[in-house]
Length: 220
Image: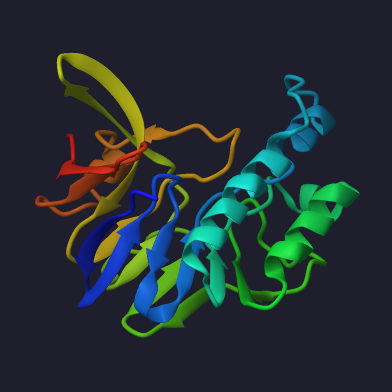
């Protein structure tokens, strides 16, 4: 796995090609915005019909990251389910896969705006989670320090070797990290949009995801 190590708040964290965040010293794996059950939620609300395979595909990638990093705790940064009904109505194979991934490790479900309450899947459900110098929550808060969040699904458009590319990215400055969406059917918000450009410090960087993550100044 071509993880990219980088310093943050006195710790060394690893950006994974998948969009996950690994904290080796803590044996912690963090992922944001799984949006499990999105195809079900869209069908239920009369939206476009999507193939109902995204949940298992997302969990397959999460299983790969767990196998590669061997975490003792996993933190899911909110919007793990596309809504609370999707969390309650997960198909049997999806529930079984989640249970297998949770076995033998601490599992933290941080509450998000799509899933503001607990679902019956075990684990610990928290508004936010503090570990050492870091605080894990779904949506970034003004004035935070050592914050790891999701919600915005950041992506960046850059030109590499003469080609214009749009990639999911992790944003980092001296105070906060914003993780990309991990789920299969999740879109993205360009990091030059005001919501992100005004939130991140002037010297912020973007870590572009791909087989080999690339760190560069945050495009604005």
